[in-house]
Amino acid sequence: MRVISADDLNRVLDYASVIDRLDAFFRSGNTRQEHAHYPVNVPGGAEATLIVMPCWEEGAYIGVKIVNVFPDNGGRGLPTIMATYMLSSGETGETLAMLDGNTLTARRTASASALASRYLSRPNAARMVMVGTGVLAAHLIRAHATVRPIADVKVWGRSPDKAEAVAENLNSEDLRVAATTDLEAAVAEADIVSCATPSLEPLVLGAWLRPGQHVDLVGSFKPDMREADDEVMRRATIFADTRADILKKPGDIVQPLEAGVITAEDVVGDLFGLAQGTCAGRRADDEITLFKSMGTAIEDLAAATLALERL
Image (cartoon, rainbow, N blue to C red; front, side):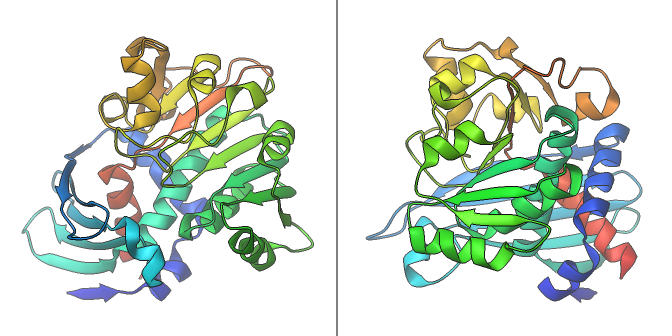
């Protein structure tokens, strides 16, 4: 059994290759997956979540990711998400590798958003706002810049110091990255609005949006979590990584569904449909598109097998 570290994954999983690998997996439709969430009581702290994500490709690979989400970890100087991935042979069941789940998750999540952007954002999208300053922020910025000519990025977070740190780390001659405290203005001028936060209240408002933008919502995965308000959902053409999961779990979809703001039919497609050509992506320059990411076990398996094969 091979142990594949975070350094290994950062070395071999460049965003362009992972994006193409995800596209191929969604296009093939040869994988099967499950996804289970379990609440975990933390005495004296916020409720944690245990997520189990198995996926298999018949005759090839079996993968299982175990994810522990502990919202209070930020105050302890620890990542909110702790994950481990086990990859096995689909022919014999032999364990082939154990992978660092945090790095795998970050790279495949950002790459999935970038894959969606390749289908949904305007090809000339050059300005981006990153809402959130956690581990995913840098990955999302770099991944989106892989598929679109992103040249200017604004970073907003509840902590201005953290936003400054993210911006300072990424700013370069080719990619101008700066922190901002004016989220409304940053959203209004952006071509791509990406959010990766644990927020329980909407941060991006539909009144701020202009025609032609693409919204990328990554953070919410439970019904009480929310990154965009009802007006965003009402104005946007909505896509997901997997349509079935998206209708049941994240608050950004579940809450407006329950309120009658949108219907299930308003989620018009997912990465399967986009990759296989069974649903249209962006249809007009002035269309507002939205991708709601939940994270799927297919994405993990695609990235994990790519890493193993390259190593």
